[in-house]
Length: 211
Image (cartoon, rainbow, N blue to C red; front, top):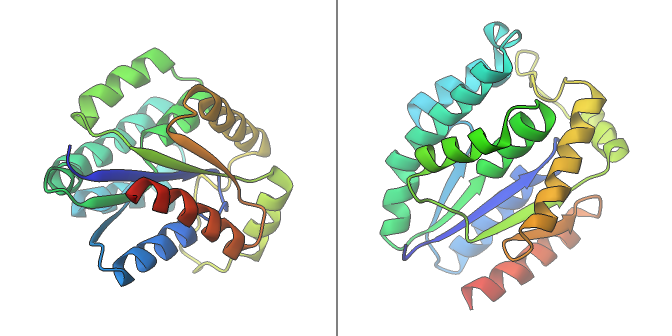
C-alpha cells in the first residue's frame, strides 16, 4: 500500500500512549498528516467494545476466547473503516497496539493457539500489516511502580492492568520473543529510561523510515 503503517506495542505502563502522541505531534508540526488509532477502539463500535473489555463489570469474567473475539471485532471494524482507506490514500497511520498485542496477550499469556491466532489475523486485517513496530520494553518492577503513580478516575480501572504479575511476565517474554522473530520490523526500545530519551530514539528510527 502507498501509505506507511507504524504500530506501538508493549506491556502495561510502558509509555506507549505518551510516545505515540509525541510522535504524532512532531510529525504534524512538520506538515505530515497523521491518522492516530488505538486498540481496542478508534471507531464508535470499537469504543463500545473497549468499554466492555477494559472498564465494565461484565468484562470481569470474560473467558479467553470471548476476549479474543471482542478484540478481533474491534480491529476488524477499525481496519475496514479507517486504517485501510488511510493507507490506500498514502497516509501515515500510527496505531497504539495491533496484532502483536493479540499474539502476546491472548496467545503467549492466555495460552490460545498461536496458529489459529495467525489465521484470525489474516481474516481480520485484510492485508494491513505494520511497516515498523516500536516495542517499548519495561521491566516488571518499574511497571508496578508506574502503575501505582498513575492517577485514574474512580470508574476507569483497567481490567488488564489488574491481572496477576505472572500474566505480565508472560506478556513481556512473549514480546521479547516476537522481537527476536521479526528483527526487521520490530525495534526494541528500553522504556525504563526518561521519556525524552525514549522519544529521541523513536524519532531517529522514524526519521530513517521516512527518509
